[in-house]
Amino acid sequence: MPLITNLKTKRSSLSIIAFVLLFLSCPLAVEGKKARHPFDLFNHEMHTAMFEGVVSCETCHADPASFTNRDKINRLGCHVCHNSDNPPLPASNDCSRCHPDGKIPKPEDHKADWKAKHQIFAKQNPESCAQCHSDSMFCINCHQRRDDVQEEMHRRNFRYVHSIEARANPRRCDACHSISYCQQCHSGKEDL
Amino acid sequence: MPRHPSVPLASGKRILFLFCGLFAVIPPVVFSPRVMADEIHLDASVAGQVREDDQSQRETPVNGYLGALFKDTESHFSTAADLRVFRDFNLRRDAFDLYQALIRWDPIDLLKLDFGRQFISQGFSTDIIDGIKMRIVPKGIVGFTLYAGVPRTVEEGDFNRDDGLLTGLSIGFKDVPRTNAQIHVSWRKEEVNGTGFGGNDEILAGANLSYQLSNSPRTLLYGLFEYDTTGQVINAGTAGVDLSVGRLFSLNTEFNYFNVNRDSERPSILEAFTEGPILSGRGAFTLTLVRRTLDFVSGYSYQWEEITSGTHRPGHLLDAGFEITFEEEGLLLSPGYYFRKSYGGTLHGVRALLHEQFTPRFYFSVAGDYAKYEKVTNHNGNAATLSLWTGYEVIKGLTLSAGWEMNRNVFFDNDVRGSFRIDYAFNHKFENKKK
Image (cartoon, rainbow over all chains, first blue to last red; front, side):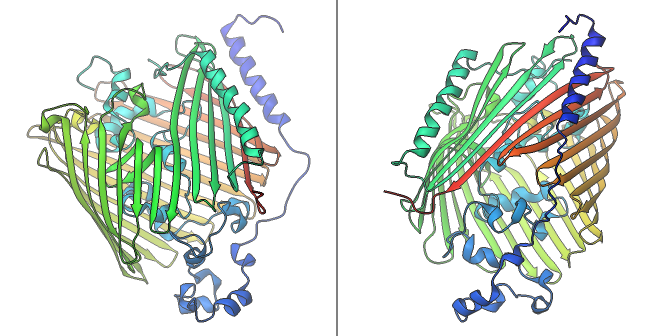
């Protein structure tokens, strides 16, 4: 490979290599089988035969409309027996056993800016979060994990605009960063 | 513009030795007939990038992440470890982070013990500590959590220096319909042997409550109160309402009060930017326009900050966008707009994400962001970024990904980066474990 000395050529070469890798990664075969809904795996007859009188119907059918519309079934009803704090019949740690292809539906309260409000509920009842997020690394990935290769928590542009956002709400920064983090770049400056 | 420095903690040879050691030890332990675990989960990820800094110096940062979980149901033991190894091969910089190394033991249903380095989200803390956490869940409606250890912060540079001491207790309801409530108390010493109770020690007391008022519409009231007894300051007060109408509309509103003890020997970023409390109001909603296909999401928060004694300034944060999902086709589109305004300046930005899961094994993702800003220092400008990623699961658990990124900003006319990522996940449950 010839020695590349020109800066522009160097950058162009990097781009070309990246594009070639992108095209080489295209698959030839298509796998199209769609994921099944977790309820498709549920054997209602077995459950009612074994647990009638032990587990009430309301565990899953809190909403009467759910008897004819499975979208209204209490999705956490399964977790009562299989994935709670002390489940009588614990499920595997492999969530894909019931949630094929890893498509786990979000609870209703995970809408309306869940990222901003989740700290109250996470500190209140961390065991509830652990039903789906059983690995503590899930929390560490946002709060503590260092990564300057991939854009995880902040956009790549954040470095150039963070002074505006930090002044808009400095308490948000405290969730993950200590003052020494700022001082590593703004060193020797009392005023940030 | 300075690149954020990595913290050199170990030589390259030591890092290499550690990695080789882990991969030499783990397979024999895992596959030994004497192994205790009946569930094994391994996650390994290596991500690297080639780029140049604003001094035209080439950087080749590589992050390696390794996570392992071993679980033995019969003995009620499980262990977990998560670490990161970093090396920039051009700049010859290394770093090592150990995020978790813990042993979990559940000897009886009523007792759960965690020993070692662990992440705790309890009371007032979201910290990594080297210590112990004990959860006691007697029959009844009350549970207890105690924890104690040395807090560790990856940004502090050296995991092994004296980081003080943190202990805490949480008492809360459990299995009470529609209600979650906890009271917390914690004691943090900045220096273990330090005196000077006011600055070196931080004793916090607080309460956290939520109550679901009704099922339809689902209405949740929640509140939080945190008080610093050593500084005699209310750290946080929150009152909020969470409302869901069917699956079509979700609304959240919240009011907050934030302050901090300014005599503490553990300064915070809030303290650096303010000399008084912050009053804040926040509202957000998600509106489902087409079920399972089109959501409109928006959130706005307003802050009234005392930046110097007697001087207040507002802060605005706004995000709005669409989330478009075509589940059958594996397509996710997420265009949006964001706005920030503070005494530091004004920012307008647009972002977009497209993620296509062509097959369960093959994905493609493109993300873009453009921001236009005006700062009070008259450093005005715009910044744009575009990134592409594509990956394929070549064998079960092993995914290879390649990425390309281009950035334009005040420092770079054309910052082009090439990236790669290798992800491996191994999960196994032994059905008939031999003793």
